[in-house]
Length: 347
Ligand SMILES: Nc1ncnc2c1ncn2[C@@H]1O[C@H](COP(=O)(O)OP(=O)(O)OP(=O)(O)O)[C@@H](O)[C@H]1O
Ligand SMILES: [Mg+2]
Image 1 (tube, rainbow, N blue to C red):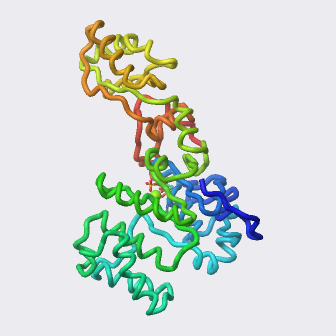
Image 2 (image 1 turned 90 degrees about the vertical axis):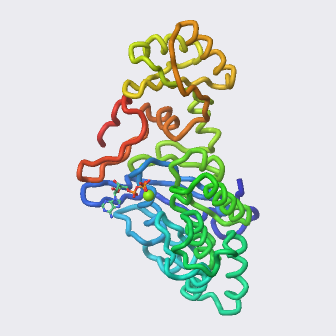
């Protein structure tokens, strides 16, 4: 919750975005995106595939010009003062920027030279970063021999060489295994504790929950909800119980059997026969009650579990529909979420 302390003359806001629009042909990727990130805090931008996360990051890191709207980093306009902005920021993107033929050490040295880090400083910083990112043993192997998680960590290490005031991380853990994910979280937490302002994008509520002081949920290039992870989870209403009904004919009976476990209404996916029940703070008691209720109604089920709310649950709570990916302009869309949810209005 690092707010800027003291009455510095500079604005305490590190990232300020006002009504950004960006289209690619007929795909309106950003539709009036606005957000603010206090200096020294971590903002998580949470959204499904195609929500506009990378587009927003590319505009904020001067890689793309917006069609309209204003974005400022530490008070500097990303379009008019792009050169100044570039000196203040670093980006670890969805695709890494490392050179696979070079070793980890060589990658860091090269990036340092590109960022005008002096020879003496590099001699200190490179071993320090290799150590901090758990890459000492692999330091002198070509990066192409690294796992995905190691490549991500090297990329992030390289981005830190210019001591950025503001760091952009675009889906830093997508594609990593659970261990790689936890390792990356550790590194990001460490950076946040040192006071770096961080904007990270993610598709996972638990990741935003772990790392971010505050979260904006975006869909189709607009903010549809914002707050802390707890505030968003409150909107979902606590834990979610799920199970699969074995016999398709019994889905409706199952919904009736578990209706008393929720203040809302249980829902079922007609295709997968997966039943979802928001059980609030009932916790593991809900599991016991569900087993009893289904058993006494003689309904066979499998895969019963109690889980914390996901991005899909937040979407469902906020919008009344599951997270849906934007089509790519050719009518192709990567869909996520429940297929029986009503489709969102085309905007
Ligand atoms: N260069 C481009 N040309 C055409 N369309 C684009 C381009 N870049 C992005 N888009 C479109 O803009 C929309 C937003 O894309 P963006 O990459 O910002 O989404 P995202 O939230 O980062 O998704 P993901 O989670 O898949 O990375 C999508 O519909 C995408 O197809
Ligand atoms: Mg992206």
